[in-house]
Amino acid sequence: LAKTTQPISMDSYEGQEVNITCSHNNIATNDYITWYQQFPSQGPRFIIQGYKTKVTNEVASLFIPADRKSSTLSLPRVSLSDTAVYYCLVVSNYGGSQGNLIFGKGTKLSVKP
Amino acid sequence: DVKVTQSSRYLVKRTGEKVFLECVQDMDHENMFWYRQDPGLGLRLIYFSYDVKMKEKGDIPEGYSVSREKKERFSLILESASTNQTSMYLCASSFVQLNSPLHFGNGTRLTVT
Image (cartoon, rainbow over all chains, first blue to last red):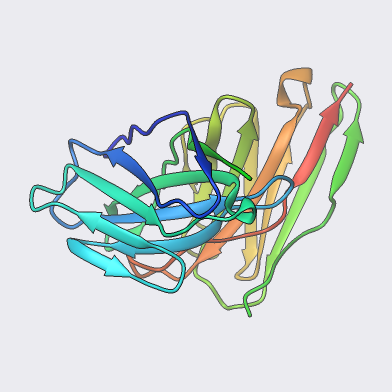
């Protein structure tokens, strides 16, 4: 199972672009990289997922280099409402399904006015 | 929209009591998960299930058991609650496909006194 490492916390200001990098050195060939966002008193919410290169949706972009040993979540022009904990997760194949999904400790992003 | 409902938002129990935490999902998901979340430790997987009556241990199964008699319902059982099981408990569900995102409930804050 691929273990992930990400910064404990990050600070930013409104309007800036924020990049959060996650290391997953022992990622396996069939593993996916997924990011979740969690606000206080709520369960985590899926943001974005990727396998390689770049993925973009209405919320964020995900950059994955060719060796796939790391990934970077990019949040364009953050606002105060983006203050949350962001989790990087490597989804591993478990008998053809996903299983034993291990979350790391997450990155607490604080956006200031 | 996917809904994962946890039966209680807050629960207070005494040491030694048997505690049931219930989780129901309405999207016909095959996979269901139980996590606990503690400050500084992130989310830790307790048990997961990929089918009715099937269960697999996660990272920290000691002191817990689970039951999945119906596809939509996944119960977490604390056989004899202890104070170190005071925590936020989060249930999640997903389709079986490897790249299917997890959908979380809003959690149950359990206090054992």
